[in-house]
Image 1 (spheres, helix red, strand yellow):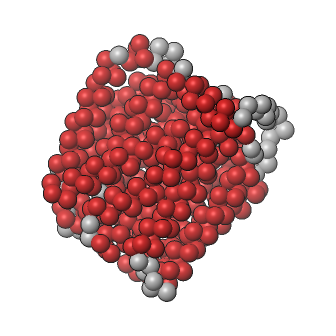
Image 2: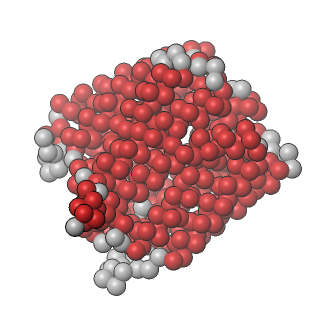
Length: 416
């Protein structure tokens, strides 16, 4: 009885882990996400170390993001036409190869900014085709009643990685060098591939009917589907304007840590780690509370708090202050993100999932690219703080317009 009561306290987390496929998925997801952020912080710091330029930080972000924006409509249509599981295995293998090349170039001390840029571009291309298929993994392999909890727990893995990955990456870079950091990323993809090979499709899963339209017809239908769903379209607007400011600042963190706080790679790792800690707490809270993430009102208020916290973080004068604010930023940003993803995942039909979720990721990446470019370019003369503050103010204007019209915009999903 005591054990049952303790499990009941975990709520949706217990529901998610009761599923065999989700437990296996969890092993691969945790390993790959942690190693992924080890690579992200390593690439970011190498770029700053090689160039000491906020423009190059912005360019490197765009090279990773631009393929997502250009290729995502194609990748989403492919994910709805073909076996998503096979697409995942292929793209993970290519990403493993890309990580191995980074390690090889770093080991031979031949990794220039141009080589790094080319491999970052390749990473962006492979990720473009992986993500729409990846979003279909949980709905395919996990019972529908457990999907909201599984999505929230899976989000906790991402944010655990944001917490652990940068800290681990900074420790590896300082103690063992960039080669070891890139090797860790390659090992993460190996674990993920093995986990995907162990997943079993449930007996009651119904594959979507094959499309009878042309490939371009599928792309057009996906655009039409999104444009006629007001809730999905409005949440994409929230997603875009939130990520322009948030992700733009994230891309500039190496410069902020070095020039404003004077802490270098240690400060970068600490801030990202504390953002990840706050986000992990939010994701676990949402997972435990089962349906809490699927509330529009929660998403909108989390959007507001995240913007306020970002503005405060940009003005921080020391690492202790920045770390404390980063926890609040991480909690609010993850609440907004997980809530948005849960509402959209539950609203979309299975035969449209690849195109809709591909569009979601495209919007996220486009916003990150716009934010990184604008803040990075402005930071050359104005520093990181001023353009970030302007981005926060513009984001708050968007929030106010949406919040005042929330009942009309989200008529079917709004809960006060």
